[in-house]
Length: 135
Image (cartoon, rainbow, N blue to C red; front, side):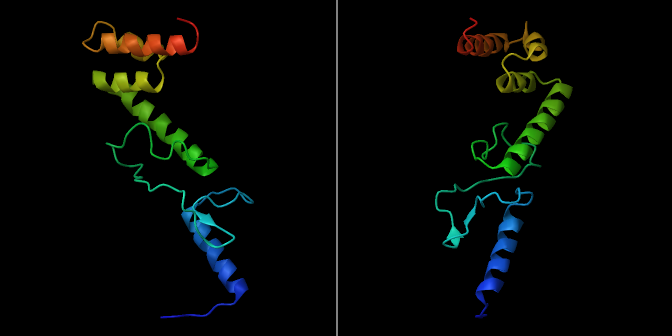
């Protein structure tokens, strides 16, 4: 089915699509997934698997390096929730995951001392201290 639209109608429709793909995009910010001129997809945008409700989703989200304020805001909220859930758990691998997120996390480091994962925790901490020039 082919429907004709005036240039003005097309632009309105185009921006509705852009806003549907990028809810919360700041006004005036260029679209991330679509180009305004010439109209079309941005070819350099990677394919993403994104399910923020998936409990098995990796800690390092696939869109972590994309420069878009709405995605960055969601990434930070996601990581805060993951940290909260990991801190409630008793699983030592969860505490090690916390240390991977923040190698200077004192509570996670202390929790892993004396455990089978203590050596890995120490390695993560020492690597972070070296990067900071403190170790």
